[in-house]
Structures are given as C-alpha cells and as structure tokens.
Length: 208
Image 1 (spheres, rainbow, N blue to C red):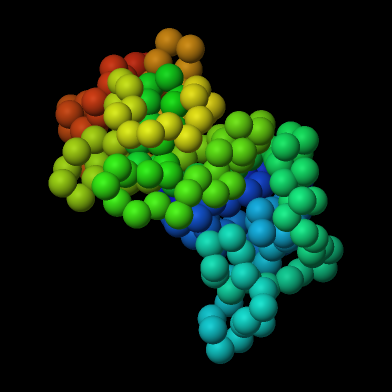
Image 2: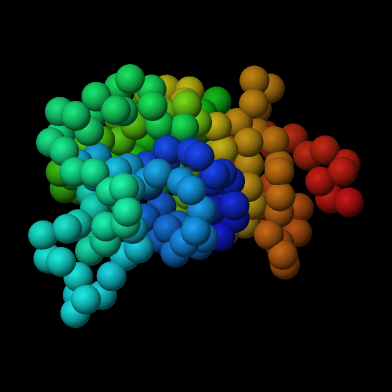
C-alpha cells in the first residue's frame, strides 16, 4: 500500500506525509522525481530518511525520523509552515487513521481512555490540502473494520478524505459512497466486503 500511495505522487506536487505509515511512503518516491515534500515542523524539500549513524541529529521530520537535506531544502518556523498549509499550497497530504467513514470523515487523533498528545497538524492538513489520502490497515488488531458507515471515534475533520489505501484495497470516497479502485492480490471481493463496514460500490471493469 505504501508503494501504491507513492504512485499517486506526481512530479511538481507539494506533499505532506503524516506521522506513522505515511512517512514510509518516502522510500518509494523516486529520488530524481521533482516533488517538494513538506513537514509541518518547518521543512520543505525533505530528503531521504537516514540511519542514526549517518543523520544530523538536529534534522528531523514531524514524526521524529532523521531526514536529510537536498538541493533546494528550506527551513522556517512553525508560523511559516502552517501558513503554507492554511493557504492551500499542499497538493496532497497522506495521513494515518483509526477510522474513516464512507462520507470521508476522518478520526485519527484519539481513542477514548487512551493517552493522546492532541490533534497535532492533522486537523489543519486534512482541512486545507487539495487532496487527502489515508494510509492504514483495513482492520484493527482485533479484526474490526476501520472503514465504517459512520465514525465512532472523535473526529479530526468531516468529509475531507478523498482516497483510502489499505492492505486490502484502494477505495475512493465519492458523492455516492465508497468506490473500489483496486483490490490487493489474494483478497477476494467477498473478503473485502466482510472487512468493510460500509456499502461498497464495485464497477465491473475493476474486477476485470
């Protein structure tokens, strides 16, 4: 799913990769692709993640990973960083999630009863980016679907998710509900429907 999400990053885009699985997308973005990666802690032009032995310990992304600088990298304070976000300059943000609803509602910041440091930048990234993608496992550790007709957890944003990437499928959020774009190899349509707690529209051409 990381490789497939990376395939939707196009030359010339300005992209934010959220904490967790989304930050791992970077390893599948070609090094020579002209794309500007933004991190809300104050970097644009983020280079590859480095090992602790090779890293500059002062240079991290929003998730704390050691990143590198490339020609054109810029550093700035959080006010400038969020001005970039709020002004709609991000073509795409990829975020993690606990739940996504069929109408594009996103819950990714709190599970009641468990510690949460807060919403962080996700609340603004999800509202202001031109496109919002979510990368997550299709079910939680107990086998419960994370894709629902309606979210049960506190929302981060309403109706802003465009595409969902999971280990079972890629789904688009459309005005008529969830639409299957691709299904993972080895996953049957019946298995996918069973693992998705929301109606799923499947075009004949998707299944070949």
